[in-house]
Length: 173
Image (cartoon, rainbow, N blue to C red; front, side, top):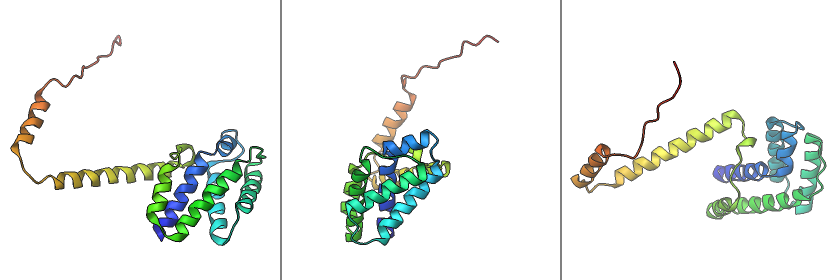
């Protein structure tokens, strides 16, 4: 269940990072990344603590919080769209269907880094690097046919012209 909660927070982060009103509020000095983190925590807690929450109730909470926290008035009704998507993800997570949640996550726009703190960016890069290494290890361990032909190809390619040209600086010394 912890994975589903993490996915719900991740979905909320993705939505908030792509919410133009929120991004512009931070860019124009109406709030900080810390206030966005507090906003995200408040909204996810609000959703988790209120069963049978309607789209309108969540939209109203989003609108009030963004007004209180960032001192901006939403006039585009984007809070309704955000509320609808968040409640949909909450429903999928409460059903415990990890595959459905993951499939819907793939449909969301990618996470914009402006929302993350420096530590979160470093953590994500480290996680991504670790995942990449794990995938490379799986790929190399699954190749067990041991053909020497592959080795020769790699050695030949290493000795061949790789198409790279060294560029020297033209600085006067």
